[in-house]
Length: 431
Image 1 (cartoon, rainbow, N blue to C red):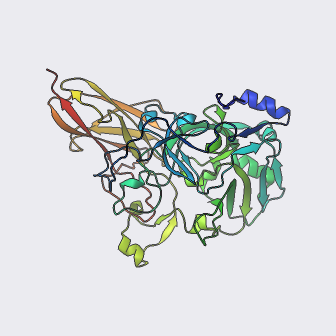
Image 2: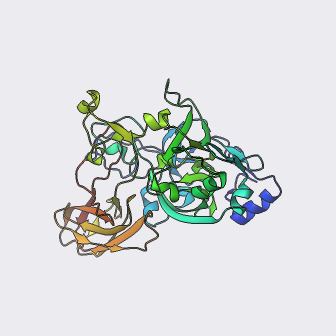
Image 3: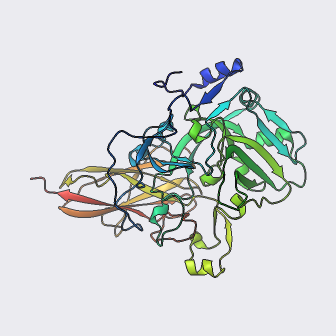
């Protein structure tokens, strides 16, 4: 395949080449360097600290080009972290080529031979399984689910005092239609034995990880008593296409409603455990204070007064996508304000808009409902009656009654940010 051609394949083609036992995908032949900076000139951006000083919706990095990807914002190149620009969130489904990327270890797969690859199901089971891609697609009923994949550290750059980790803006998220096999169906086929407590997931990535943490393999687990087990999917398609390599080809875990830390990419091993998983990525990393909203202080953390627990469900959030404040709006012109909202706890049922910074709220019109774990688009018409500065704001409510708060949050991991979003707009004279 030439460098000029995309190797995103249709499922029909994937099945055809797999039938010959020679299917494989590689990044190496497509772009000589692992990442190439866009040819566009990159102007340095000013540094910022905290939400009030940050004029940017996304993070500050340069735009880079990767295989199967449009230009995305780079936070780091090893491990690779790429953020989705704001304008891709005008629609409920995030294009595969624009979907954000987050890996934890620096040695990620850049080629997978489907004739060799197997999905192993092992541990405390009656029968160990080693399933080929063909067997996975032909022997199990396919299911589809629309779900938001959001990095646990999305919007971390808003935290003040600042915390370590990738300084994401708001674009470490995406929504897609995932198709694959129910995790429950795989586990039922293997037969889970009595005495099992958790199911552990491992992908193909390897690397150094944090020093002295035993973290060179990325391992995550879910409790067998967690209801999300029944909704979890081992996905081989994303928006009707095979998964992009950088988003977890050949299969990845989809854990609807939970943060992306559980959505294991390049999934290859599923293990049923009899004891709680205490590896670094479960017991130390991705933990939040066991407090309302996961909020605490650095003093309480330093003095050991806070119980830390694994992060779980995504709180309710909403965003203004357009207008984005990049240009003036004429006075008395009707403007369509658009955005998205979602919640890990259930469907978004109300999105409210304010043109005065949050003093007065009106309901917006919601877009099509693609399921309780999906982005929900919203829009409203606003007519500015005077010139000058306006502060637009948006807040969402989900079906469980969770309302987006207007208070900042702080924890040492930089997780769970869901404060009401605001956008400053300038209105100019029309004559």
